[in-house]
Length: 266
Image (cartoon, rainbow, N blue to C red):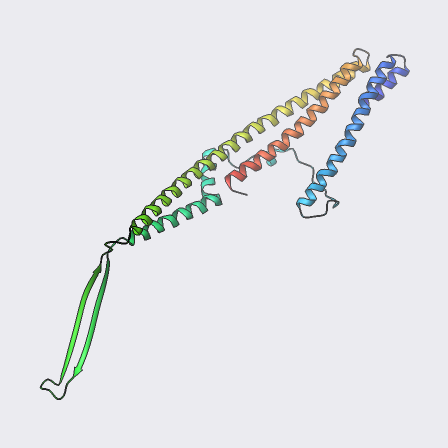
């Protein structure tokens, strides 16, 4: 709009041709069309967010504007090894898998126990009162041990032990694989975060350059040293730089959230 207004002013003064006004007007109307399209997208996203929150899609939602500060994008610790250790201690699926491994170990122990001999202790005591005989009473005590050997059970105990051993080893392997998978997720999420952080820093530098370029192009056009094409190009580059910074910022927030998710903190 600023470029269009400036082109109209210079045309009235006879400093530029009608072509400048037409080009500036076309770019301005294209920007208006883009605004209408993006407003529709905002409404669509607002409805999707409301439904995600179990609300009606026409529920008004007001989101706080993002704060482009270090607090919102910095992570608590920059030591990826510590993050991996935290993930191994916090991730619930690993805790569940380790519990399953312990259960399989208990099953193996029970299966091995069924193949061992069984020892039983027996004891008895009796009292007899025979008053008609020379010995009026008698006391009898007995104690003993019995051992039961599972000599043959149709190989069922052996099969059950082999099966339990296999399941225990499989569970151990699954636990180790899950640990490596979690560590790899943390590592990948950390690298994505570092890349997103660097991209955001670069987007800030690009925006500063685009802002300065637009100011110079506008001043040149004001004094008649630049043409409308250069000005409109600088304006478009500035708009792209602003959008790229916003995109980089939200990508950084998402990469930070994914990193915390991989750690199991939230």
